[in-house]
Image 1 (cartoon, rainbow, N blue to C red):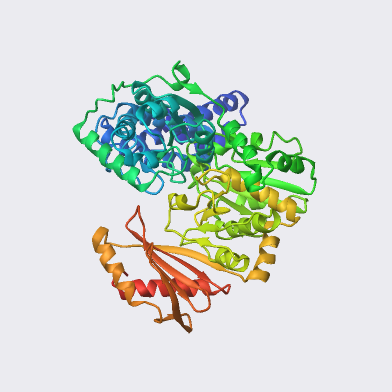
Image 2: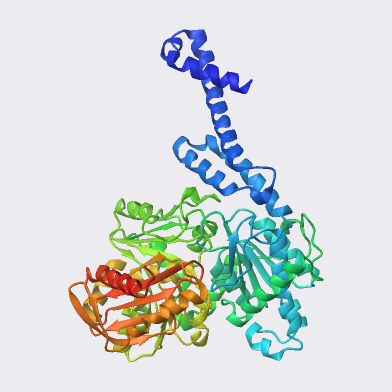
Length: 615
């Protein structure tokens, strides 16, 4: 019947203009057109499903279907949404019922464990990883070396202080949280339930609630098909490598054995809202409490900053949440301002992120730029935040400000405008603009390898900790990167200095010299030890070696090899080459002292890789 209707619709389409002029037929035809269009869409969905979906979850590629349907939604509108929802229902069944091992072995990297929803991240795998974390706390009673890493002295203390549980906007977040809570409650841990929230807010909650640890179900800025799992210990920062290595090893053993004494796993654990043994709380309220409490340390007066924004007609703020968890907080963060000068973009729920890669990028920033350019205010602040709210990038509508620049600007602002003295911390792959500032101030600089957890030795000492991949935190705040503290800092900065971010940056460049960072990467066929052996051949580029960069020959003045190889030239420009920790890729980071020099440095990095046989 369906095929016959579609056939008739296609046959009658050429006669549409004539038949619509006949009143009775025209009325019936308009209704028929709607039904025919719907049936045509259904037929196209059936064709897509027949290609990509079978009766075996393990072989089904639901996200290829979802992405194809999302593309159709972009073209034809919301008529496709119910079909997208149908495929997500199939995916939820896989998440709830998958009893296989993850397709890719569990591995905790610099920001937790990430994998494909349904294939790697599902109720059973999440439960076993949670069991592996609990085993850490069971071991603390007889392994005192774990005490400083975990921040608790006994299993009993960890159970009493409990765990903060939350998730970002990813599909299935509440169901996965239910599985985590089931394991924690079964092991007699107190559960503080945040629901959907951001990484920085959950980190603040650990400190404010004096919880033993947190579990946050998020893959950060990864595409829509990914799920993830972040574990922070009692210090509220990314877990130490010693802990994540043990979690990885223990989780793999539990999964291989396909059993655990800690997991009495139900197929459908009750959703958190229906449980009586969890403690729900307002996560953003804990964040505000922490910021207010530590005002004297970092100099940011939350209530005064928000009041100033409400009463200052010269400034407009545009924030793009890209449908992520920050959409729940932005209005409340700025106290439900009625000024009309807070514009919130992509602030509605959408687990597909509108079909874009949900990261703070120049491409995703276009909506913010357009909104700012249409506004009459003199001061303009725009920001884009990733799904779990731990990364942020800025613009003033005329110039984009990456964290390479904003982190250094934040250091200058806290040091010179707020009168806070102290060191700055940045990862080795980040711009040396902050180095120039610290040298001028007579302050120290801490420059570790990539990964926010590497800042642990200077938390409470460094005024600012930041990395080039859009993450930042400040003294007196959490040891976790947090978009909200970045937004509050930027708002205070613009209003205090009375200049847009681009203008403030120009002032600093005139005084301390300009830096022009860039980054790139290439896929390689070598991995693991083979790749490391090939990269070790770059040691020939030592101090005093000459490297051709564009039309110039530059002499290497300094080499930093704590994370790959960073080669600094006599004029302060540099290039760095390091293997990716998550992909078969080699990444390179460069920084020039001239506007066009970065491209030449990228070419020089590629030439070096070609010289050791990686291109």
